[in-house]
Structure formats: structure tokens, C-alpha cells
Length: 295
Ligand SMILES: *[C@@H]1O[C@H](CO)[C@@H](O)[C@H](O)[C@H]1NC(C)=O
Ligand SMILES: *[C@@H]1O[C@H](CO)[C@@H](O)[C@H](O)[C@H]1NC(C)=O
Image 1 (tube, helix red, strand yellow):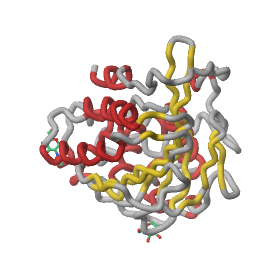
Image 2 (spheres, protein in one colour):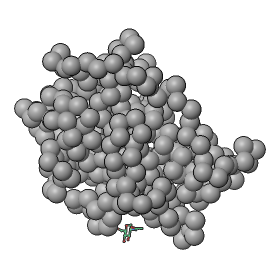
Image 3 (tube, protein in one colour):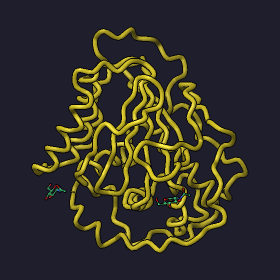
């Protein structure tokens, strides 16, 4: 099916790479991170599934953003437990890559600072060789948590498996941003091709609007060597609008492009938080963060 094609054709490795053997045997051998205080395993979800949210997992089959407009009636309520940042001081380290992420970050084009929800890394495995390509962290406007009351008390596993929840986060008009930090140099075209290989199968029949958005997106990367340490932000302002910032020299201070196609912004969110994420460690970490904050 499309998903497996999308992920298996991801090529992150230009032939010029020096391949290093990864001694840690990749994400799937690590136990899932534990909760600081533990969540009772028998705790039943307060509300198993809310029929008002669309199924993110069906996006690739029934790709109809128009439908989404019927489902955006959140009623944000203040939630006392959702006002603190998980982790602690000023940054959190992604354990597999040692990349440090600030827990609170002011981003180009965003109206207020965003809070780190979880981190992970992207690894490309060739036979027995695991090559880490980048670390990633998801930042959100913490007010998003107060729209997720339906998931209060759920375990990280339940949250991780619930496409409704990730669909709700995507649909929220509150800012969220994925920070990507390259841990090896990648040619811009290679990076784009990999991204495009993941996005394109998720957009069945691209409209001129989609094509134009993809072309804008592509132009940021083509002909641009992305050295190790390059930082990118993919910032969803709302479902219809996404900002892209890239910097090879510290945190980006400007917006490089604006993507205005819901098909593209949704496909990109699905690449990371759909049912077949390119970085399972990121989705797991974000789910843990959500479970902790929604306790
Ligand atoms: C979330 O975003 C809104 C609107 O941009 C802003 O007013 C608010 O301060 C933000 N909330 C937090 C917790 O940052
Ligand atoms: C998304 O794609 C569908 C067809 O695949 C199209 O009908 C729709 O207009 C597209 N949406 C946008 C915003 O381009």
C-alpha cells in the first residue's frame, strides 16, 4: 500500500556519505520510556473515541480537507494540569543523538513561545547499519492541551495509537512546530527527494495549489548543501498554513517560505504523526509527553 511505498523509498543517504556503524541497535530495541510516576495500566479511557474527530489514518484514503471544517468546534477549557512543561530546565537532550532542544522556544513567525512536547530521531537502516540522519522535537502552544480533555488519563500507548488525537492536534488553529536538527550533512536535493517521496503518495491528485506549494517548498532545499547542525522548523500556524525556516548557522531567525495548501501541510503532519511515522521514537516521545501533561 501507499504507506509502505512512501517509507521504503525514502533515500537519505547520498553515495558520498561516510557510513558509521550505529552501536545502539536503533529505536525498536529500546524499551518505551517510562512515566515519571506511572499510569495505572487498568485505567480505562474516559472517552474512548470522540466521533467528532476525523480519522487521521484514513487521510490517505479519503483525502478531503473540506470535511475537516465540520470538525473544528473545540471548546477550549482551562486545565490546571496542562500548564507545566514536561522535562525541566532550559533544554532537553534527545538521548540517541545528544541534540539539545530548548524546552521553550520563540520561533520566527509565531505569536508566542512554544513548549517542547517530545523528541526523537530519524534513522535510516540499511541491513544491519543504522544511520542517524536527524533529531526532531515537536513544539506546541500549550493551550492545545486544554482542547484535549477527552484524552485525560489515557496511557501513552493509548494516546500513541489514537489517530483522532493527532488529527485534533493537526486541526487546532494553535501554533505547533517541528524542529529538525541534522546530525550529518545531507545534500539539499537528497533531503527534498526524501521528503517528497513521503509527501507525494499522501496527496493522490495534487491540485495546482498543491503543486505550487510543493514547488515553493522544493526551492528552499535545491542546490543547497545542508551541513551537519542545520536546523529547520516546519511550523503549522493552522491547518491551512505552514512556515518553513532553515538555518545552517544556529536557530533560524526568519521564515524562508510559506506553504498554503492544506493537502501539503496535512501530508507533512501525517509523515511524522500518522500511523506510519518516519521517526517512531518522536511519536512515542510526544505521546509520553501528552500522557504526562494530560494526567
Ligand atoms: C497560544 O496562542 C495564543 C494565540 O496565538 C496566545 O494568545 C497564547 O498566549 C498562547 N498560549 C500559550 C500558553 O503560549
Ligand atoms: C486536495 O486534493 C484534492 C484532490 O486530491 C482536491 O480536491 C482538493 O482541492 C485539494 N485541496 C487543496 C487545498 O488544494
